Length: 330
Image 1 (cartoon, one colour):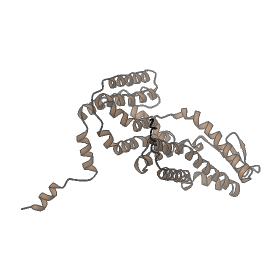
Image 2: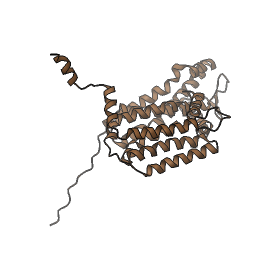
Image 3: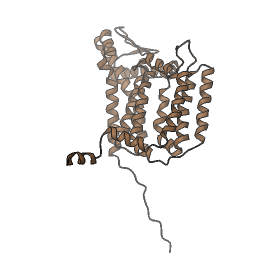
């Protein structure tokens, strides 16, 4: 008798592949959903982009990829390539909650799907692919509601909102980056002049000293928008995969802390560039600016800050509602 093989067959398989199979079996109406999803994505692939003079492809996904590629991972839009994997990771982490909802057909989801189609048609006619992107993701959200119901939509709402970070903004970011450039250069100027006692002059977004031994321009890439986007994604990933905080307000605070942390980290990097330029000259400052090692500094500082905030939140006891006894009247 092959007892060993029989016993091995009785032991359930473990590992990621088995978990994926179990989750797939528990998901209802998946055939119906994925057929509709394939048709929806096919529409945006074959009739998604009408701006052929800028990107020679009918695919909206091709237009998005071109925008991400032009920016690169170092650009603000380049971080959009990291958003979709992050969404899948968060959805996988929430799989038990998602699969425990009460599934059911919800016909108003069809209205969301129709609204997404209308936005896409408008964007296609007026050659505004960003409108089509809103229609694309809005339609997928409506499609999920149509097939799986409102409880699914509520459970997946936050990770799905991250699709907004996949929108290529291009020159639209100038409305944010220029004020950030001015703020960063103004802050560095006053830190050196008022705190460190080192004379730094500022004209607009240019920083230099009275001797003219160095001169640096706080360009759009140095405004901190790029690092802010990336650090925000890091904070979201850390919150859902490594942090032990569970309440909504704690998670919101931990994720929200990445914004000031990214700004502080960028100020530290720019201060290092100005400091090295002040003491060692323009060439050394340029080296710190261009060095891959020193470009990691803001991320290291921000990650350390995220760990500190997380540790503080984990040590902070949850306040349970006080149950004061009701007064007893004779």
